[in-house]
Structure formats: structure tokens, C-alpha cells
Amino acid sequence: MKKVLVIAFFASLVFTGIYTVITLYDSNLKAGRMYQTPVVRPHEEPELIMDKRTIADQKSEALLRELLTAGFILTPVKATQAMLTKGEKDYQAFCSHCHGPKMDGLGTVGQSFSPLPTDLTGEKTVTMSDEELFAFISYGGKKAPAMASSMSVESRKAVIRYIRHIQKMGHGSS
Image 1 (cartoon, helix red, strand yellow):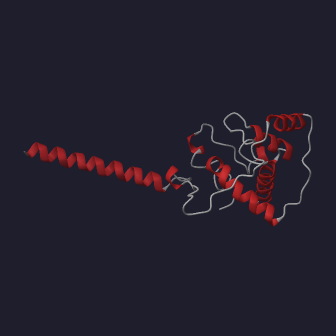
Image 2 (cartoon, helix red, strand yellow):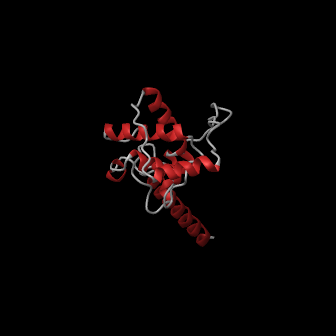
């Protein structure tokens, strides 16, 4: 009987220690956990409505890809507050899960990747042209998904304006 009590006491001590370590680890993470990822809750918030032109036919996407590879230049647009607001909303919906709310590559989904997703406020992205960034968002990269069939052209442009705005501010958003 004494042995059983000692073993039970030792087991509960080990369990408590493991629980404490996990709790400390979670509370000191730079980024959140999957259960903290913002989600669309259709019954609590209005659901995002996709632009009817979002899913383009093959001809228009092929034409856009051809233009991008042939030196296509995005028309410079001054970032209005409405465009920045749309860009922020679309960034949160499509990009923040991997790149993080601060654009530092520490999104809740992105933490599972090795290497981590690109820091959008870092030198690599700052030095990319808007056209290169548009093409990368549209057609993806090594682990980045192609967003051309999920995001409208206007949405991708708004996200680029938002990223550039945050880069000029010198830090990620909260």
C-alpha cells in the first residue's frame, strides 16, 4: 500500500511539473497558438464576401502572368485611407496566419514552417518591386500559396499598399 501511495505521489509530482513547464512555454512564446488565430465566425460577424471577379478564367490569369513576366508595371496609386483599410482587412484575412499580425513571419500557422515565412518588414521584401511582390502573392513561392484564385487583383494591390505603408512606418502592426 505504501508503494502505491509513493508511486501515485511521484506521478502527480511529475504531471504537475510537466504542466508547469508547458504553461510557462506557452506564456513566453513570441507568437500565439493555433487556438488564438483569428477566424471568421459567420454567426457572430459578417462573413467576408469575395469579389465576383476573384476566380478569374484561365485566359485572364494567363494574360496577367504573361504581362508580369514581360515587365508589366503596376500603375502607381497613392495609398488612400480606404485602400489601406481594405489592405489591412485583406492582409488579416489572407496573410496574417502565416506572416503574423506584425508581418514578422511569426503567424500561428507559419510557426510550423521551417524556415519561417518571410518577414515582410525585412530587407528582402522592402527591396522587392511592387510588380515582384504582386507576382509573388499571385503565384506563390516555395511554401507560399498562389493567391490569384483567392484574392481579387484589387485586393492584392491593396495588400501591397498596406505592406508598403507598414514598411514606411518602420514596424509591424499590432
